[in-house]
Image (tube, rainbow, N blue to C red; front, top):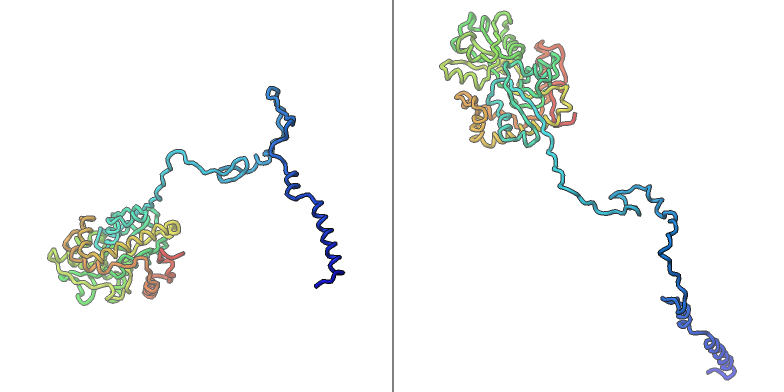
Length: 394
């Protein structure tokens, strides 16, 4: 317990503090007196403007600095606040993508070996890829590559041996697809042929229809027989090889379709013998290719790639629908519907290229080496000068 002497100072302190608190005004009351009233006090004079007097001239525009700033529906400024745009009138129609037109010339009359082209056209596979494709037949088998080199058509069908020959002659041609990846030609001879030397071809009349038939196939045949070119007769038959054989104007032809001509002649009672060109030394090669003009390839590459994609889809459909493919071809090209073509169709169908764009580098390099070693060309060209895959970057 605290003593009486300790309690006296504490009591005095409490009395002093209590007196100070009693002298201070209440806080709440002080804040209430200082708070402004919502209304002026009574008897306050109010200034009312005289609307009959002219208004004072306006002062500076406080928004003048903003008038020069960007404005519009996408710019939020004090003068042009952002507001949703409202379309007035109907929406403009969306324009369809442009259609690219390609003219393709065959190497011969329409044939079963051209099946991928006709099926792609009939099944609208070109149209689905934005292409308008016209397939035309040449007046002469030498015409397609000439027109292509002259930029008169977009694509031409030909054979790998002829492609090598023409590129070495300075033509701006390049392979972009393969329709048939095996040789299709053969030496077809009449069995009743009668020429001076039965043991060899000396004195024979062997016609040809194409430049590569004479310059490459016939030259290789004669070299294998050790027969000089001057010892035989080789007329240029163009489209008339079948008629020339029937009329016995020739003993045989060197670049005949091995699956077509023998059957067509047999239907007329003419017996023949067939010797594939590989048997006398011609290397395996692409039997049917699609070529473009190299000078225009850069701007046509995308269209050609879409074109070749359509061929691949068409070939897959042909192989998956063997019973439906021939009626479709016959309806698309009535001239195809002959006994010889119907008989040859299963053989040719099995030889269609499943991957038309795919390029065998070794095949083209090997054929260059063969031509060089046979003395038919003076130098070997790189494969890139002869063939490309249009789906790869240049």
